[in-house]
Length: 299
Image (tube, rainbow, N blue to C red; front, side, top):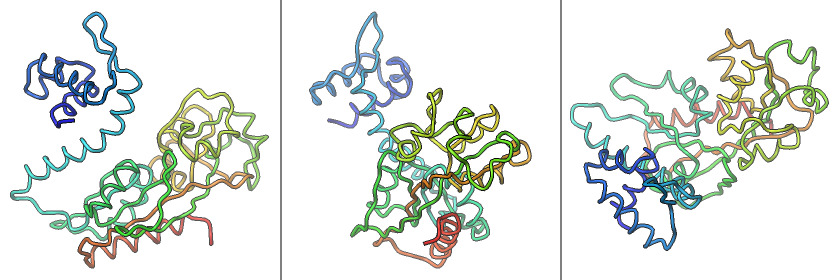
């Protein structure tokens, strides 16, 4: 597989159009089509169904796109960084995290540590991209979640510490009457309940508490906001509850209770072993660790 073949495939999947992909790449439409054909030959797999001049992605294309996207996004980030290096201050600390912790928890705890001319850079990424960045020693700190079954153990390339964050039922105040100190399964069954998509580990742990699925969400925060706006209950972790309260508490009026059945979400705090460390990175790491510990079950 050659880079131009992968680039052509990625642009077609991204835009849904061979002609638009060609424009984005500065190539001709036949060149892009030939690159995709060569990629299919190399993979010995048909990626698209071609009918009436249109290319419809098959399941194989969707799988390849999801695997390829973190790599292409990283390449684009590298290109962007190189093109902007002249005359700008480099980040003092580089952090990559899962979307949920990057929405509020991490920015809130590291904001006092950032300096105007040496800013802290916070990026979001999938678990696969976060692990790749840690293996490549590209970031000072990372926080990953379990996603679709990610289990991280100690590595010769990075340090990792796990935090068990309890899952709560989040809802608009007054929706469930007085649910008591915990949310029971009986109370949940009286309402529409949302959880993460079923491939996600937390989605699997909570599946038996959810009725007929009308939405499948990838991230806790948008799911929580949708549930609060539609009179439903969202099964989210404690980090999401405090995030919603901080960012939208006045408008969405959230309330939450721990579940009667104890369910948790795992987060992993990571540091590369061979990247140079600084006082600023140490301070950010300690602040994030304290924030994760505060959100976790004791012990």
